[in-house]
Image (cartoon, rainbow over all chains, first blue to last red; front, top):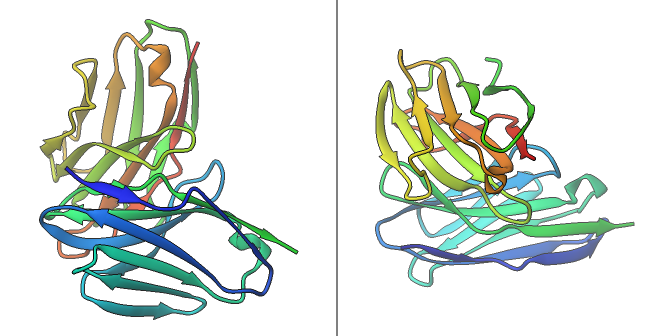
Length: 109
Length: 113
């Protein structure tokens, strides 16, 4: 089976930097994804890591350590619109994703 | 490219009724996935198609649930004899073989009274 852990909630201030951690246990690891989900909407893709290291995409970066079963999503220059749930998902094999419960991020002025 | 679409967006039904949802994937995507999401949880995998073949089903998918993708394009998910516990957001996603990312549709929100 697979187990994915991420914090339930985080708060941060507009303009700040926030790091959302995700730890996982799985066999046959084949990639880790981060999705953003606003309330009542579908998840939207943010990033994908399959090799160790940092992937940067604008204000968002994602890091993976396969040996530690650990990833983080880094959000810089936070904006109010970044208030959302952030979902960590792991793929084992070549098909389906297993999602964590999501981290609800609240950005305050 | 219009993205993944789902219909209906909302469905209210009475316990014991049957419901059917439709998903139209991104046109060139050959893989299609169904997930279910309840409040405060991440999406849970239900089933997966590659073209018209249903390759994987979750243990969550009871015999009341059936999914089809008859021509390898759109897919339907049917729930028979709905129960209150079936109330959830049903999400469809698609991807293309060789590309890793799954793209989600807007979901169908089901409420069983």
